[in-house]
Length: 407
Image (cartoon, rainbow, N blue to C red; front, side):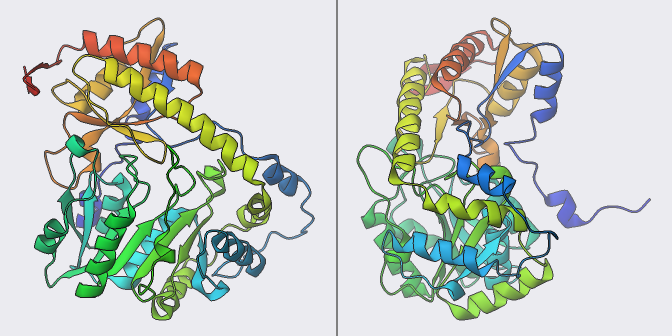
């Protein structure tokens, strides 16, 4: 019998989606499942999207240009200008979500066997993209003790080898919710210039920043035109994940020319998503204010509840809509599956994402999990009641002695 490729065998399952069969089985038994595993907002997609979709009069649904529709690229150009980023149409390729933007960038900038430095825990799909491109991840560890802040410059220096070609961060971070400071971005700026590295920055959560802080786009920093590649998307910003519209952004024209060749090979990004998504960039500031206030309420409630649970640690995230939490359990992969297969509280259970899948280092993250606060407060409160009851009942629960887990 023919066998699959070595790459196919190495491709990791998504920690965000691999528990879906167990969740479906729980629902089939009549159990309500509170899904906190995936960054799927429950805030309605703005009416402007649906109105544009309903009013389309296009006759034939055709391919768009491989780099995206020019009118849609111009919407992104205008959007970036609002926070001081100098971007022209030729600096933008519209993609099928930020996922395709990242995949194209990795294939355009790195050769098989090259290395990319990523602080971990990291967005799980980065591991999949690296595997698909035969690129190795060189992890730099962040810790829950300081809220997953960027490691010192020395940690990056130690990770840089001749094979190192890029550094990748997500800002604000998925899965930790950490918002990088100007000082931390300047460290990355110096590293990229000193070692002639690409600096990949995933900025899809740019608007989700709390406590009066502001997000600084890497596109506004000087001297990085040849180094920076940014990934963006309308999925989270406009609660339009299924539209599958993202963007790859760079002022490095050699990168953009290579990226366009990959974009041509996949033909084009979704036409309907571009046409319906264009009016979203005209939404007033009040739209962003509303969703930020809503997520902020959820953030404070979620973290407060988690911090009150015995043995649980959860730093307050500064951005995005995720929290990376440490749980008093033997293994979060087992715990998360047990919650779906064997536990319910008042007719409900909870699905969260096990932490191990957010680490490229084997054996890491076994007591951690990512929780997405993407449900409204009433459901979030019920989900926390269920999680707290589940932690108390779990047979593999650990106790803490002087801050250390013991069986």
